[in-house]
Length: 89
Image (cartoon, rainbow, N blue to C red):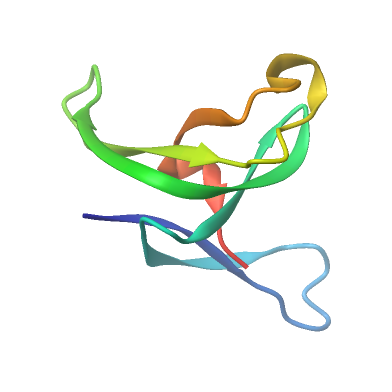
């Protein structure tokens, strides 16, 4: 199963604006997300769900065996994040 996340394109002289493209990710890939601060996790599961407005979206279950940081996820080793809130380098 695949999901799409943002991959940012940085260009010199772009004056702070950023562009991105959507790229496919799969179980085993590492993605970044922000929860209190930027952190990363490895995708262990992808689920496709319908949101309240009927749109199809993907949620990513992420794992970091060293644990996540911040007040919200402190010491947790797994979290579920919306794919729209994740990115890949």
